[in-house]
Length: 124
Image (cartoon, rainbow, N blue to C red; front, side, top):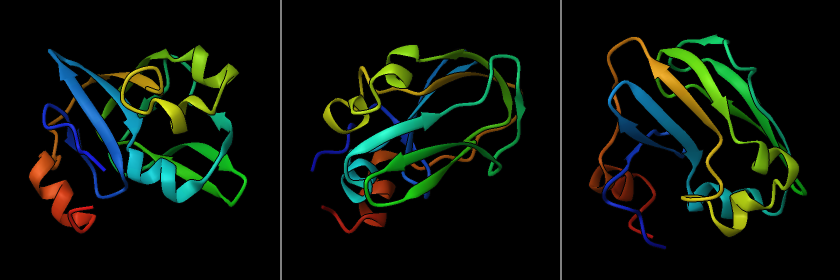
């Protein structure tokens, strides 16, 4: 499974694309595969203040329910309504159509690069 090198990652299997002070967040293909078929996504509302490491949403699959953790400090500025309507996008296109939220970053970030994330998941 490929790990896009232009993205940053968390140990909770989320990817983060930073553009200026806005971070786009999604789950990795590794997470999608581990979850199985995603059937429901609960995302924080626009305007919600979040802190790194806090649970800020849920992803429900046919196997389990998993928390979505905030990868950065900030405020939610946009939700991906397409993923709310079709949660399966997290399985079929996690790095493009399957993004979850955009966050205006208000603090420092502590994210993994692609190499560190590949090492975390065992180079799969």
